[in-house]
Image 1 (cartoon, rainbow, N blue to C red):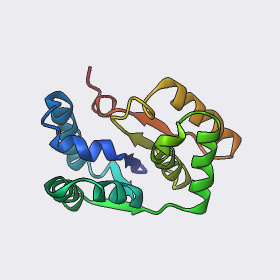
Image 2: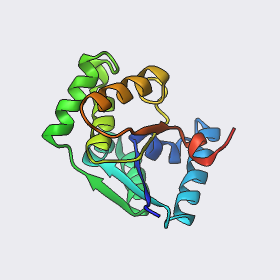
Image 3: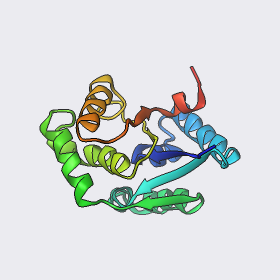
Image 4: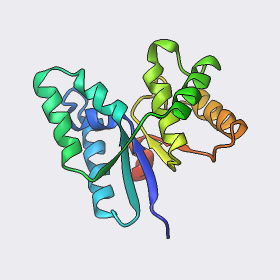
Length: 159
């Protein structure tokens, strides 16, 4: 059986150290433990865009977040012209506000690189019905296969 390809958006890396949100922190760590335990079933991906976003964090936070990445077997995906154009379409169609264009680009990078699932804690722009349905419609119209968008709760099968 083919490994499921999971793209972990920046919020997932951030919540490993989210002391102000202990429930989500616990679920995030539990999800990482599950994915490591079942490494024959999953391949983990992030993008160069995530590394840029982490670079914008302050001091110790940057070091911690880079450590999360260094301690796991991630494949790093590049932003391509194709992903840039697809992200712009998500913005143009009103799925993601221009001010939060990185969220559109995360989805586009994952789509263009043929990921199966995007995992995110970003309920404002990514893990929400409008975005999920819009991405499905746009991706289909552009000839991409469907991509699932889940929170860590759904990855774990948690309530």
